Image (cartoon, rainbow, N blue to C red; front, side, top):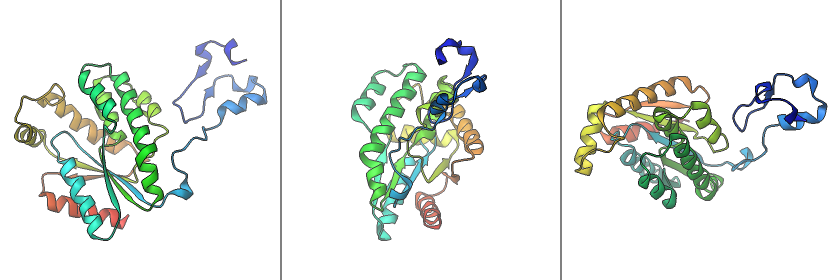
Length: 242
């Protein structure tokens, strides 16, 4: 039985990966069942007809504006397109807003749950119908924000291991000064604890770091300082090329 060994005898990785045991050879063949990858999936490979694209970047980088423009360009080109935005679920969004100092791991759980709801109710269905899904943020945000706040990267990967990954992520690269200026102009209010200069600086650095290390995900860095029309046109052309 697996419980006859202490926790030190097993190395357990994230859900969606295999469980590696130091003394696996001492187990009988029935133990191989726990080594199988989970069969759960929101979208089977042969069901997918559409494309899923995410727009990412620091607060004030222009994600929402660019996502809307890209979707409009796709529809003008005769494509079906829908816009989604994280967090998606109103109840989870309110919970996050009402608990700004929540533990980062709990926060990561909530965002992962929100993504799974979005995957189940919207994204998977749209991709089955030959529709483009343009998302304002994706799981990359958790690998940035919750990581900076203290959640381990392995935990964030684990929580997001079953979600549908974007076909491409476009990272809008702007300076922290530009982001702060846009936020102040747009919101006309004092910045929140997640929008101060030092925090946004860490966010920007983390985005650049993860975009260079996440090898199994297509991430394209885009100059977010350019005109919105130029940015959206560049992303549109890249999507079509993909």
